[in-house]
Amino acid sequence: MRHKLYILTLLIIAVCGCRRVKPQSPANRPSVDSLGLAITMVNLRMAEEADLTCTKYAQTCDSTFVLSEDGYWYHIIRNGDTSLSEALKEGMIVELHYCTYKLNGQLIEDTQQQIRIGKRETLFALDKLLPVLHEDEQAQLICPYYTAYGIEANNQVDFYTNCIIHLNKIQIIEHTK
Image 1: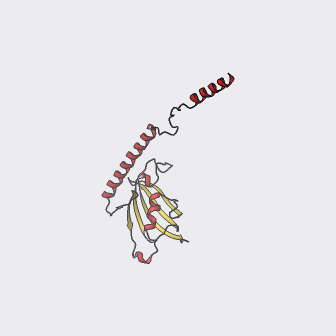
Image 2: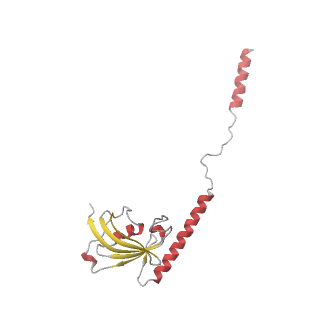
Image 3: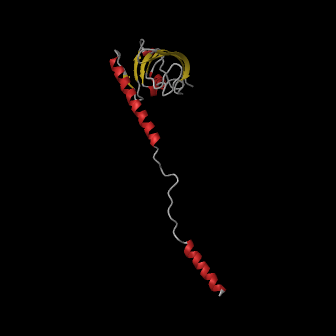
């Protein structure tokens, strides 16, 4: 009798224990982040407006500006024969002097700084343009906010400020090693 009870108990446990487990929803299932999506759409719209504003401004200028693949407009001012001056390369340490203006002409800042090219130690648009230039060249840039100061603000720069950069001087301090 005990033996039959033991077999019956094992049979019940086996039948109940072998039932299929109900599927569970995954914990890492993607959820819709409506706030994040809304912020992304606002940023895209603001970037498009900045692009349009800078494009219109570039078209009103006397100089021939070129649109870079990174989204800023630039015009290189060559001072004489560039074959006599050294081309800038990533990794070089250079001293820059540039002035930044709002599109209405108001001076934002007059900057002199030493940077290593390609290390993002200056405004994005300047850092990207420098390897195209030679030491004795100057340049003018028309920058949407996302290629200049970004969405940051400080004492001199408002949020989302499109700007004009006049690169007045480039001097090589240290060559690439």
